Image 1 (cartoon, rainbow, N blue to C red):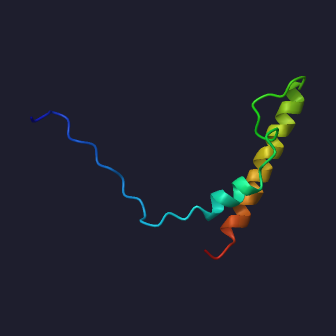
Image 2 (tube, rainbow, N blue to C red; image 1 turned 45 degrees about the vertical axis):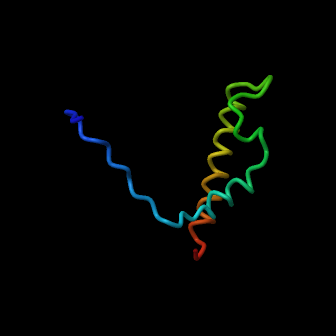
Length: 70
């Protein structure tokens, strides 16, 4: 059966997807409070400070991974 809309094209992905960088991030961010949406009794300022710290930690870990010779 023909249709008006063409079939979607599946994007190509590398045969060997290297997940080393994401594994490094996961291994080094095991504190569940770091990325929790909200902690009990937390003020807006404390939540913002925690979110900024989490973003900084994630950035540092990704930069570490970027410097590796894969």
